[in-house]
Image (cartoon, rainbow, N blue to C red; front, side, top):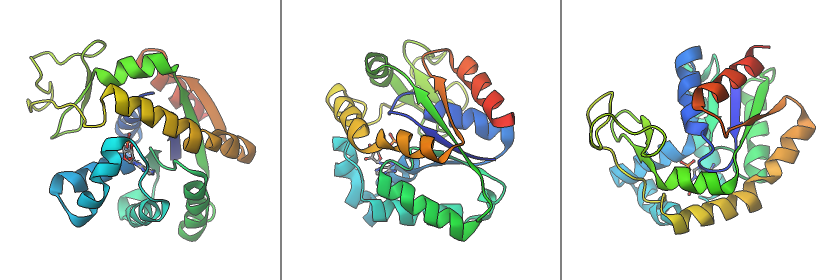
Length: 215
Ligand code: AMP
């Protein structure tokens, strides 16, 4: 099962990717998570991308394609994967086409767009909190942790992403409209493209996605 989740920041791609990962036993490939891990480690790559990420701008296509190629060549991706937050530009989508041809020419990618109105996205992202240890996602309004700012699963102190401030969120949405939204047309033309309403409870969105993937 080869899945791409497409949609603006905050539509629930990460939440759905984690649910899909648990259900189907295939890895989530989140370029954002990979980059954040590098920033955390203060590696040369992390230092190179931190400011770009804090502004909500995009990291260069070449760099992202290299990261994705390395990741997709790992053995756990041979049975399937869930792309989350990649591709984000037309050159990345073209690079992915080339890469998949090289890795597995018969691979069938299913593209799922998750759509949510902007004002709801802003509300969701300013209230988003993340567990630094296990990656579990919370929302102070919709899915608050049971204990004050602690992860329900592992007890770690939750944090707010540096780019989840209102100004950066607005920039990330503008970047999405300009660079990433054209991918909807790109994949619609290719086929195997589906759209789900992301302005519903996560379990309901998940049910619809599973239905699309297993039909
Ligand atoms: P995300 O966690 O997907 O919201 O990504 C966080 C940030 O990482 C983005 O705002 C970009 O700065 C960077 N990033 C993640 N994925 C990509 C990508 N495919 N292309 C370019 N930049 C990316």
